[in-house]
Length: 419
Ligand code: AMP
Image (cartoon, rainbow, N blue to C red; front, top):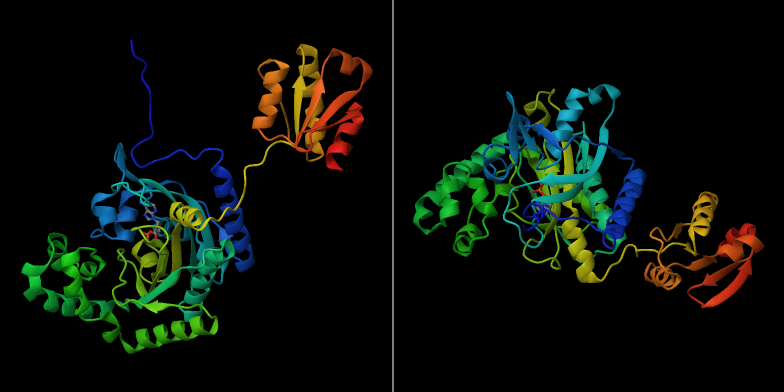
């Protein structure tokens, strides 16, 4: 009978030792940067009610219409969260965070789920870090969010990026613009790609997202939303640009950056990289002044960003950036016989308490096999223990890097390794 083997779901991967160190180092860097920007971490469940995501992300988006992992339990409909902003908005309302006063500055790191066709930089379980600044409509908040996001890439050393910037205005702007787009594209309908044609009557702004070749010349001559901004939206956008200039954060205007999510208002931005392949967006975000009300809270302005960790890792690899190397143990106890193994087991806690990373053989292997294992694990020192060593309280401490040996007593091991 053949054995059944199991694999991860399509587009979901295991993160293994050897790679995980890079992830841990990145997470530390994000936590540290967040601390300096005075953002506080929030962790929400990976499941949310389907209705929250449908409202918060928008029924007409690809995410809601075809990419959700949904399941039902009794009368309840749930989804594995496809993004982080609607869940944070829900948490803000549910936990009355507004009552804590001032603005809420929240950030998160975690897994997200979208049933997309997997390819390089696009997975079904992927990871994002993101931040939300809730309770301010000031352009200063937009720029603080952008500064926080770009600071992370700058510190990692990913410099070859472009910040694309646009404004999608307020609801009145968008209504006028949708109509203008519809009027423009309608006579060109037979030239549009099928996917854009489907969007024409439902959400013509999404035609601007199209990557189809045949849509590009039609897009190029399309009306631009920045020509339709209300006076208030224009003032806000001008202030954002001026503040970015003052902070020396370069940007490029992208009139077609409308993003797929319905809750965005005013500023929209995306950080792209030429080093990560066709899925070139490292992250993006914008203002979403309508979302919190949409999910049951009071009208509350907010701005945020979300960035993909897998794509950040692809950029690091392309640029040869290593954030952390896997490190071996400080001490590997090589033991001969049961008594020696027990002694090592008892000795290790004391050494670990002084900060040393200790390990030993756990499978009763030969001395030769243990030395090989110590080498493979890149141990700095091996301590060799047998019956005689225990009787005499004199051990061989081998420096695996310098290939030198010292005779030490039990009490001297830590001092010698730490020296
Ligand atoms: P979005 O929530 O769609 O604005 O995505 C924000 C960022 O998350 C993108 O710029 C990507 O870096 C990353 N991202 C989104 N979807 C995926 C995915 N399916 N696989 C990997 N990364 C993703």
